[in-house]
Amino acid sequence: MTAQTQFRPFDTLIDEARALSLLREAVAGADDGELFLERRRSEVLAYDDGRVRTASYDATEGFGLRAVRGETAGYAHSTEISENALKRAVETARLAVGDGGGTLADAPQHTNVRLYGDADPMADATFPVKIATLQEIDAFARDLDSRVVQVSATLAASLQEVVILRPEGHAVTDTRPMTRLNVSVIVEEDGRRESGMAGGGGRYALTGLIDPDHWKNLSREALRIALVNLDAVPAPAGVMDVALGSGWPGILLHEAIGHGLEGDFNRKKSSAFAGLMGQKIASKGVTVLDDGTIPDRRGSLTVDDEGTPSGKNTLIEDGVLVGYMQDRQNARLMGVAPTGNGRRESFAHAPMPRMTNTYMLSGNADPDAIVADVKDGIYAVGFGGGQVDITNGKFVFSCTEAYRVENGKVGAPVKGATLIGDGATALKQIRAVGNDMALDPGIGNCGKAGQWVPVGVGQPTLLIGGLTVGGSAA
Image 1 (spheres, rainbow, N blue to C red):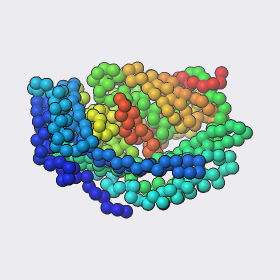
Image 2 (image 1 turned 180 degrees about the horizontal axis):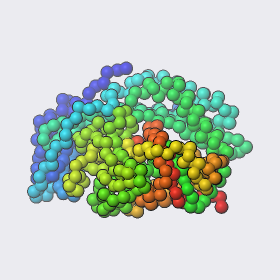
Image 3 (image 1 turned 45 degrees about the horizontal axis):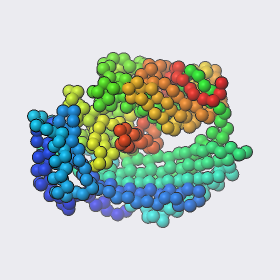
Image 4 (image 1 turned 90 degrees about the vertical axis):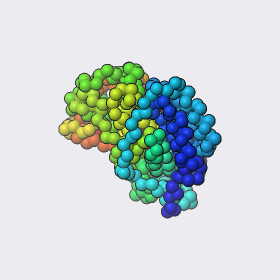
């Protein structure tokens, strides 16, 4: 393993004292602002259908300068970290300040907590070793079953280094590793093809992901899902009870409910949950958290992209709405404290309230008993894509692994099932919460306003009554 070279823009690219002076010039008369400097390096290796399809390495660096006055933010960014570029950015950022009159918000609290290491995961193995691992995955997966006709494996690693300079003169630093391995399998029988995928990762070294014990388990799981889908029958359609498995099905919670609990949507009253603070919005026993402090998790952050330490924030407690996720701007405008949820995709993007790891706590119900309570419905344990309308909470999600349930008995797998509903109603129709809360394996990405960030989700087994299932069977 090679030593990590710390990102020191003030040593090599720009004088820190001069940068601070220009930052203070940009935020004079403003309510808030910061200089965000970033260096990111990433590598993606993809092996598909018996050959290397992608072998890419990318390196970027730049800065973003922000000045905030009221509800307006001025933002400028550049890939050139220099005094001249920063001077030009000051002119742009100050357009939001106008005549000033603002009072600079208090600085974020400092933290000595570190939720992940700072070593470069790309240096954990040589390029030939990484390629050989992907080739071994391909061969192993094909040997598992004669029906396997195609295998795809992707190995990705990155290192993001940030420095956040505050007008008070404090520079917050964070080094964020990320790794991921995905395996996809396509099987064919009697002219019918189906696929299955398994993967995951987090903010840790690459070595665990390329260990044979790990990728062999992923390959077996991908094949299992593909074979389940090979036997799937058309999904039923109609309003019915739905049991959701633990772990990754929390993506439905993330999309249908989580986005509606972000501060900006509630401040602007565009969320279905706006104005409901302190009111019962979910069934008793439902407690939902957003927690960016879980070590090594994909959605975790030692500090957010404004320099605020991440928090373990309760959003819904025993069915009652008790909190929103906040960045600094929306928190100030709503008269509450920031929660460590100010996130941005890169230096080229302004921060906004975003989720980290969003999950529902365990209840007391036995998971098997929950499924046994389904008289006529489906049991969904895997999800693909989905979408939600924040203003009314209406969602549509496609299932990648689901089963028909009749009179409490799990039957044949079903294909083509979609879950349709709205988050506010679904929360109140939760009839049972299992005792098996699990987090996803580290595969989540979240999009909002054109920005993508890594996230985590989780939940226990749930029973939701009266969801609309879209399918192809009468």
